[in-house]
Image (cartoon, rainbow, N blue to C red; front, side, top):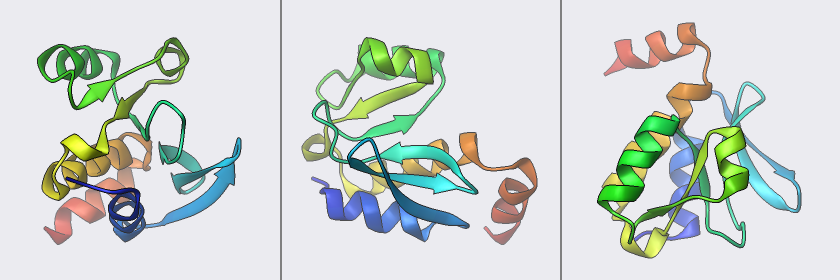
Length: 112
């Protein structure tokens, strides 16, 4: 089971990530591009491809959902109480990779 504090901690641990309020909620950005948001009434959101979102929502609807607004912006919603910290970290890292510049991602991958 994960919490908003876990999401914030994991997101801010990723390279060049900052937190900035937008639309009345915290958003997490890599070099200015949003990859995650917190405190939305529909649950925290993360950047994802439409194909992956459809697959995850169909396979594990207890963990993942989306709104029609998310479809326009390539996001999906998380049910934090259904995700363990390791799974949340993987999802956030994937979302970060989608928003980060390719050179930053390559540098991050080289550190592993």
